[in-house]
Length: 461
Image (cartoon, rainbow, N blue to C red; front, side, top):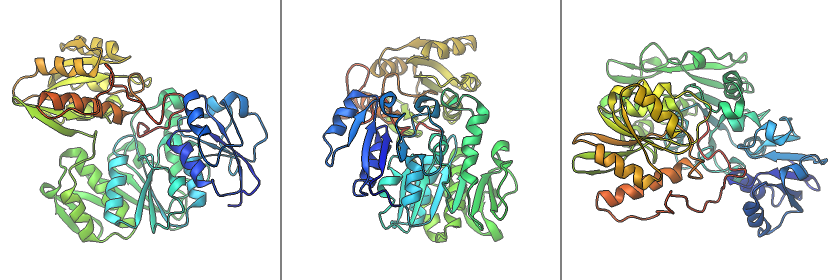
C-alpha cells in the first residue's frame, strides 16, 4: 500500500486512531487528525512525528483527502461521509490492507471476545489477537504473525468495505446498538458484511441455534460449518461430549474449565474457528480444560459471609445481563448505565431470580420501574461504592451480588472495563483485601479514550 505523499486524515484518536498513526508513521504520508475531544488533540500534539494538521471533525472532514481512516466509534452520520473502498475506510480495513497473513474473524452480539481469545490460544503464540479485543489491527498488521484472529464489531465492519478474512464466525445476534445503527436491520446487515468478501474456499462458521445467524446467505464457493448446543451441527454436544466433524469426540462437557450454556457455546464456536485454521486437537482440548473465563465476564471476584460477588460488567445489553442473571439461583442485581435504545424486558423476564435490584446510572430509573412492576424491590445508588454496599445489605447467605448492567458504561465511566475494575475495588474492601484503583466518588479514572470520539473498546456487538 503506497501512501508516499498522500494526504491522510485520521478521524478519532482513541485506541484505533493511535494504531493507525503508528501503522502509517513511516509510510511517507502527510498525516492529519480530526478529533473533537480537546484533551486528545493535546495528547496527539505531543507525538513524534507530529501531525501535519489537527482540528475538529467539522473543520477537516470536508477537505480533499486522499484517504480518510475512521475510528469505529464514529458513525457515517456523525462524520458526514459513507464508507468507500480506498478512500473512506476504518482501522479494521486498513489492518486488512496491510496484513500479510491469513485472518480468522469473529463477530457476534455476545461472546465474540471470549471466542476470539480462545481461538488465538488454540492456534498458539505465533497467532496475534487484535481488533475489538483491544489491540489495533492496523498497529500489529505487519508484525510477522502467522495468522491474525480479529474480533470484529458491527461498528468496525461498517467501515470495512473490502475486508476479506479467510474464515469468519458469527456467535449470535440480539438487539444492540440501535442508537448507532438506527434500526435492527441495519445492525444485522453490518454483521452480515463479515461474510460478503470471503474468498473462494473460505469458511463461514454459524450458530445453528440462532435463527438470524443460521439463515445468513453466503457467497458461492464458501464452506458452511455450524455449531449447536441443542441439535444437529458440525460441532455439537452429543451424549455429554463436544463432538466435531467425522464424529471426532473432543472432550466431555464436564471437563470444560468454563461450563454452563454460555461456556459450551463459546467452546464450540472457538473449536470450529480454530479447526478451520488447522489447530492441533490436543491444543484445543488443553485450552478448553484450562480456560475459566475472561475478566469482566461473569468473573467471580470475591466472597464474604456466604455471599459471592460476580463482575459481569461486559454485559452491556439486556440480553447479556439476563444470561448472567439466569446463571445463578438468586442474585442481588446491580444494573444500569447509559441505554442503547433497547428494551430492558429481557432482564425483568428473569425477575424471579432477583432478590433485589440496585440501579445505577442514566437508565437506572427505567430499569428500577420495570423490576418493581414485576414485584422486585429496588434502590438507587449514586456511586459504585454505594451500589455494592446496598446490594451487600440486601443479600442472603448463598446469594450472588451480580454487576450485570445491561447498558453501556459511558455515563459514569470510559469503558465497561473501568466500571468492572471499580466494582472489583469496592468488593476487595468488603472481602478484606487491599483496595487499589478506586477513582473519585463515581469511579471515574483518567482514560486514554475519553468520551469525545472513543473507540468501541469492547462494548460493541
